[in-house]
Image 1 (cartoon, rainbow, N blue to C red):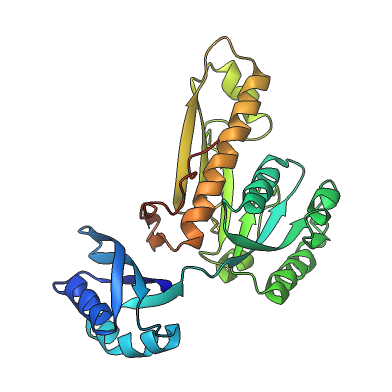
Image 2 (image 1 turned 45 degrees about the vertical axis):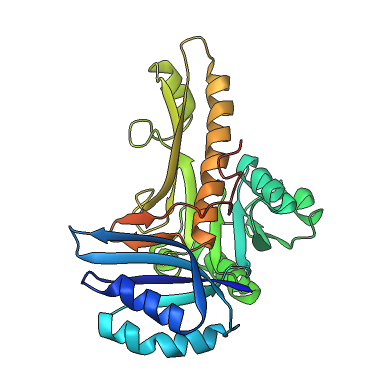
Length: 294
């Protein structure tokens, strides 16, 4: 049986869940997992439903048939084939811990994506990427050529048919135009010391101030630098006995795990934009047994 998912966003009102359940039942579908959230502050309703199609109906037919229900409730909705892998472009600079972690998870099947390209402004990771049979593009970025460089980046993304860009410690600031064009489709990762420790060597700054918690934040990229809607965060405790190098090592581990979990949530359509925040539904039982693995 085909495993599918339906995502819905609409104004909150009575009868939404019943209407969705009745439609799926009438079309020979069996719900296997369901999550919903009613935001009383914004008046928005969010829902994600996983189901099997016993009649084997195509996505196009389900979408067309659902149009009347969607119109009645003012829904933005989409049906998804849960077996389809999202096409992803990874961008990296000279810190390779997140890239290497994603390549490993992808290789063992823990992160079910289709990595269609890796883009970097340096050549450091060309060999490791090519050895994975993934196209590598080195696109140098300077103040003088930034518009042309971003045009090249977008050309790679469009020609590869990518649905998502992952900034795996890509150390270039994207333009407002690119952020707007790819809104909700660029995920970034960084340490969670901001705004306290800005600039170079944030881990050294944290060490000098006796920080006791190291964290990482993964979020969607917007024109506001490092202030996009947060998808995933985590922390690890450190002590006075550890060195600045320990802080860096532990921080890289947290960054890698948080980024992987954020990507996993996005590709399974568990993340919904809700103004400046996100609604993130938990993974279905068994869908990612290793989601919190190190």
